[in-house]
Length: 111
Image: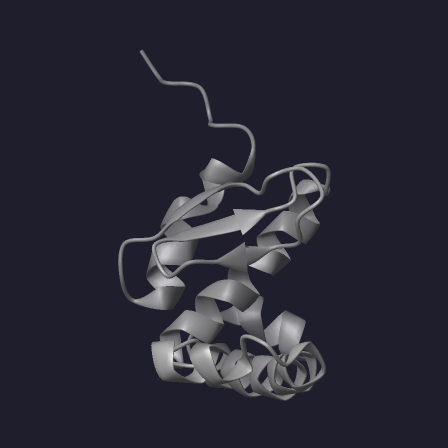
């Protein structure tokens, strides 16, 4: 008997783990919070369509794989939201470009 396909963000756990190069869980973010990760779990907004959730997972996984969210970097950016936004905008593109060489779904996002 086949098991039903999981619904919700958790269905992207294997994708996230593959991109990040480590075991990563995916779950819904608390209400009102944007997509983010703590390094073990990627949290995505539950109200987003599945395609947008997948994009968020790919980006967060790429940032983890590239080392863009290392503890020292995050600590430096913690109380500087404007700098953090600029850093993530630039670093997100770089991380996606790196992952795009081996994963077509990231290549589509990077373009």
